[in-house]
Image 1 (cartoon, rainbow, N blue to C red):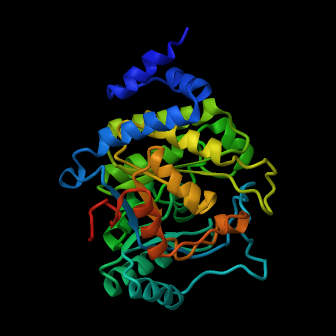
Image 2 (image 1 turned 90 degrees about the vertical axis):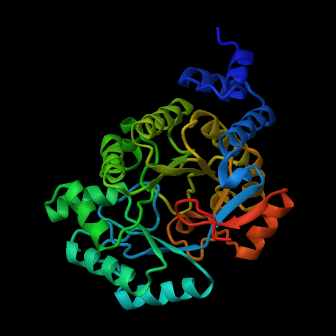
Length: 361
């Protein structure tokens, strides 16, 4: 029989917990107690950060999502963003269009673009290499945080080239880091139900392993609250923790809830209680991750703020532009000033960061 008190003692003592122990916490620990445990884990992890100020600071980044194309041939059931080439509203952005978006970002002090797109079957490698090189040359102050693991698996098929070689070419052209998109749930039983044409869990993890080996940091994500169960979330977290033990290349973890507007997948989205519980458990379980990001984009500003008491130490992006999750019903927006106010009102010092969690102010 699981002793909840002993599990809590392990957490407070900074010890690693098992999937079984994490499940017991999730199922039996009241939300506020689980949040307190996650907050203690946060304090343990950030105590020495930023010259000892880590427990007084909440970070954020000023960046912009740029979705370079909405053409995609994997037709994920949870997505309302993708289009086929024949759709009237399909697009591929030109360098000039992307420049205008980056110009707007730079004008407000932004330092990064999060650039992802659909799996376009006809874009060749030159489109991507030319774009990365152009951004590096014209905007050397802007990090290209771009192309998720499913995209790299897609590139490998279209370019007929090994993933490692593609990552090396992209890095040489200007790729600075890789986002954790397309993780959803890293359990193939679930992936086959919601995105059967997308890369497997093993393929997602292999892209991240290669990226880390090639000197690129990445983030990690989880989209939950659809057809998975808690056990699947824990399997997902276990696989992330195992890879982080191996490579140390993940900078942060971000989880968010499935949004269902206009999607084929008609599951009922998880609410704030389940979101906070899952984020708290993630902070506790992912003991080798330095940073946990609040997801105000799907939960709204108030819950995003409350999440700072449930293990999060980062408020994420100002999200100057967001086109994917918003298509499925998440319409929250936030200015830099509002983000700073929310952080201060919760008792922390807001600090702008870059992708590598270095403070910029």
